[in-house]
Every structure is written in structure tokens, then in C-alpha cells.
Image (cartoon, rainbow, N blue to C red; front, top):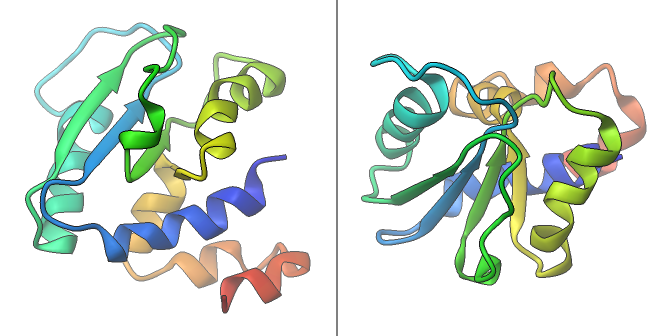
Length: 132
């Protein structure tokens, strides 16, 4: 249900500016390692891709999203494999309601690696969104 929001929100990565706040939402509680995708890899890749100095915050598990959600330039949600679709929708609702761009790990990674349009091409009903 958030797929179209993800498509539009993913493009925000290219427009991030120095000092922008990016919120990383994890859905599970897991052992953190030095190569953790949400805490280490995505922030590193995003700063390399944009050439900007960004501020990242992580909300682990199903903890509540910050009250100041409108201060974030982008929210990046994990794949949500351990939660229901309804939980994922409810988690992103505050960001969407405040017009904060949202994406997920997979779309963000595809975008930063130049394969975003190819990755979402099978979902042709969103073709018009791709070119907005």
C-alpha cells in the first residue's frame, strides 16, 4: 500500500542537502554488527551517493517514531519481514501525513546503484510516477 509513496520518496535521496536528517526505521531487534545495513552501510552509501554530510537516527524494533517526524528529510524503512503490512503502514503514517519522503532499504539501494527504474519496471501501473 505504500509502494507508490516509496517510488516518489526514493527520489528524495538525490535532493538531500548537507545537514538533512534521515530516519532509519528497523522493524526487528537484532544483534548489531559492524556491517549492519541500516546503521552502517545505508548511511555510508547515502553520503557517498549524495556527497553530503547527513545526520542519521535509527529507531530499532517497533519503537514509536519520533514526535518531530516533520524535521526529517527522509525516512528509510527496512523490508519489514517480521511485521504485518498493517504495522508497516501504521509505522510510516506519521511521516506520510507530514509529507516526509519515505522509502525502503531495497528501493534506496537500487536507486543509489542506478537500477531503480529497472527494479520497479514490473509494476507498470506506477509508470507515470517513475517520471514525475
